Image (cartoon, rainbow, N blue to C red; front, side, top):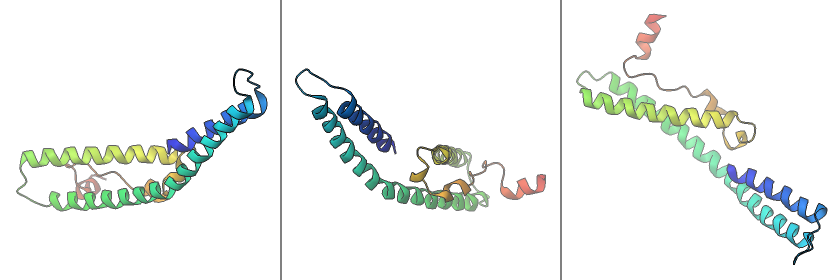
Length: 140
């Protein structure tokens, strides 16, 4: 996602050198600007190719997150889970929720939101291991 911004900066630098600046050292501004535009074009091409790949990776993340959620729900029903297993699962929940929050942040960003599917905003974080959804409903 950062590649797109870098390519836009390179395009702006290329335009700046190509039409505005006249460098009289060894190369003219047109050669320097043309070089920037060529590199920016290649960079932009690869960043646009990365767009569907990134979106597919985010769809895969959503699937993995939902699979983790269902696994956690199944384990919560297990009566014989040890304290160590509970702690390891709590760590996994924390890592998954942290990654989800990061992806949701970037999906709301105007510069990067086209790399993320809209369904990512609908994914809810996994609840704390100590409080199941049933207990949460009872509290309300």
